[in-house]
Image (cartoon, rainbow, N blue to C red; front, side, top):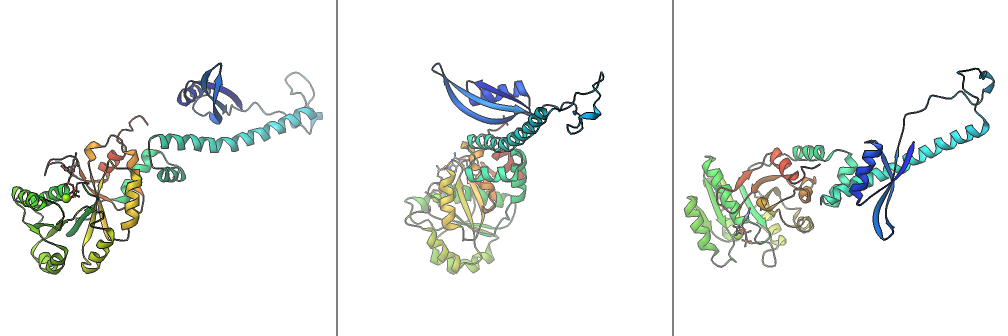
Length: 340
Ligand SMILES: Nc1nc2c(ncn2[C@@H]2O[C@H](COP(=O)(O)OP(=O)(O)OP(=O)(O)O)[C@@H](O)[C@H]2O)c(=O)[nH]1
Ligand SMILES: [Mg+2]
């Protein structure tokens, strides 16, 4: 075991030097910031397990060693004591370096801005980041194209825009008759905008309220293959609690939670806690065009969160839409991480 104290201008610089001097297998035993003559350094104590020396003869049997040329000299009592102490130190260093290695990996993952609760999962699974993402996306899979879908989400997250894009895609692919419905009666000028867009895309639309939608839902389901419902943004006027009531009346509907990819994950998780008992079968991710790094979006891989169905990649309707396959999600998660 060789132990060295190595300094660098930054932690990364120090770790690079450790790699150069002691090689890939070096383990970090300790690290700290030090001040030397007014200059700040990062100091790392690293160790490397060097190849074992040829085995010495049994210390308890000194008589067998004749002292002739080529023979080993007998182990003295001090040698034996030193040998045992070294063994002990080696074990201690090993035990100490395991948490150090874990800490180093944890810091690296946190620096990538992966949410801390997902960092814990990556460390617990003890996998490379790429394997973790690949397996997570594969496990999540892709959701079904639900027939009666209600788009919910926070104000301005892109619900109306993505709903039109998906409706147009279904129509263009000849998946059957598509109807777009809006129950967003709060928005000034919303009705005109909704109707104009429906005319432009040549998709029938219905401007209504929840009561009428609930009453007409049996006939709508008979007349149309896909019904996509737009809602006001979740907030003070339209609360998650209202959705519980609607679900009770319309048991077959499924929710598509529209999520703005540029928002902080804490924000999404807080909302998720309030709506997690609703039948939310999918997540549609918007503003994907604005995302530079996928790491903060790792929360999407949590097993609690529904799979992602669509990416909205810009403002253009109907063009900026991607139907998500597991590989699209992998590429998105690893976006901006090509250096790892
Ligand atoms: N860059 C970008 N802009 C988007 C995207 N999706 C929507 N937008 C823009 O974001 C703004 C809000 O989009 P809307 O679809 O009206 O959002 P909303 O959730 O329906 O809003 P409310 O009904 O007010 O709650 C519009 O200007 C859209 O053009 C996207 O994926 N990328
Ligand atoms: Mg809207």
